[in-house]
Image (tube, rainbow, N blue to C red):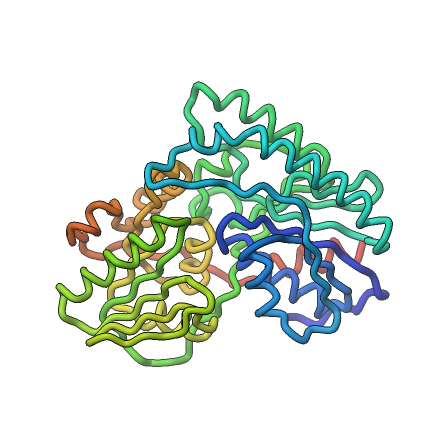
Length: 356
């Protein structure tokens, strides 16, 4: 990163949503950026996101970890947005619990700034607070959309700024319709944000699959990828997204359950055919590495289905369903990946905000 004036020692609270690993992954560059700028960082999260961040920041003296309140969302094989809607009461309670926790934490820890990745209750009236989200339009049916927009605007209004990890609206935007609404008068598009850096390796891997998503869909996708690779009969690598699982090699297929960032980048950059979910953080990684892929939305997740449509229309990416993957009906890879300048724009925005 560029050299910035180191600000006087201050402490920032960075809250990370624990819905999958995506929020933790995209928050990591900003956490590291704050550390490089001389700040102490309190990280608030729960579950797997907290475990992952602790592993990535192990031994970092300027970082402390704190468990915050957070709702645990229940998924099923036939997951739909109604599954989320049915759990609205505990989501609302979670936001109120976050608010109470934040008020106490700010006072105890003398917090100077707050950056919240989709944690709508982590803000403070007397502390500069930023909400980071790419969902300026909730992916719900038209029947609920007006109500959803009213709710998200009211929640966002408690923050001083909203940061969208995406290029500005237009041809290079990767979020498409999901960021087409305005929920806050001070909304900034801070550019692509990814922990991955282009690999310098020249190795080539015929088949690569990135597994992600909640159970049971994560395991279903892993098994389907392995079956497809065995059918193709070529060397393959599966990034299985299951911390602590180690590594296995069966025939020509290597499965990495908890790979390093370098191993992930090498697999993606070296892939001839890449298959992955259309989760937003995965798409940020594809943009950062300028790599094309066949996209498979998690069944029932409207957001991922909408992102597939955006990337198919704007960038020409091939898409298929999880059922088609299970039946080994995978289309030819196609399209041109969007361009990226790495994390520089986001780090610049962070530096300016903290300095002010």
